[in-house]
Image (tube, rainbow, N blue to C red; front, side, top):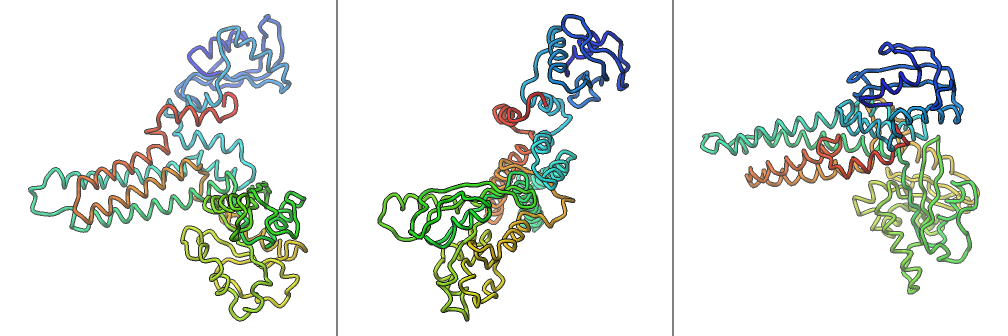
Length: 434
């Protein structure tokens, strides 16, 4: 229990006076004043408690009936059931935690791998918050310098063109990019990586999905265009979640239904964390001397678009039918040669996906993150880049405004500037009470 009456209600239930921060073995009474259990009771006076308020804690035996009787007794004395996430919400409102740390509690509870648990614990201990506060303070320092230049235009020195502002702004941009990269990695490990299988019809996408899932998830036929809609399956590699989407084969078609499916394919590709572009080894066997050049020519959208090529892995399928296919096809580009049907090369693909997710990286210095954090960091970067453009035109007032907006984005992450609607949405996703 947390709140100003927690001690009074708790001590009524155990019928003894508790010494703060000491464990007491005592009887727990039900609403009808009969003893329902014997266990440990503790009292933590605020503000030195998790929520910052008085907290009374019952450590009872774990039977659900016993716990219900204890809760019933407390409610009969004036307590009420906690809303989802209310304990963490009160800790946040009383400045015991910032919003990132509060969310890390839920992430730690929901962690589905050891790596995810470690990163959530790092965030709970303040690793992510420290980085955000460091960025916030750096922007504050720069804003002071810029606004001083605006307030004292009669000074002979042009503060905006002396190189100091540009140097500080560039350092902040680099730091935000580093934090954004770490946050993106943390979000992938916490929430799972979204992987999209793309390629031409009959390139083996559905067969590969079935092989990764180790069961028949997708229908596989020799008829081109069998897959018309996106099919999503969640799998685990080394205990980490991957959400794999099989998509309609990309080709020119007059079939309206298939064309809609191909549009959904491109939408999935744009939103993916990782794209596996499947190509049939037979298509490029005649270009064995330089197969990658031909593949790039066939798929310019993937290889020439920076937002796609940075998250692209080339998968050459059906190599069991072409054992002499060039093994140096990647030429520095991430590539895996496999046979989805026979299973050859599947372990190599799993290892590659594990490494992309950060399985081989140390969790030291990393932290868990959520998609809303990434959105805020991206907007912060956009405002800082806009400010850099304003600096080049000596528009000090506009630069100062962009810096303020960038700070607001960082404030959203830790909760300094979060609206009530956002707070309600965040804490409602917690388990009951905690």
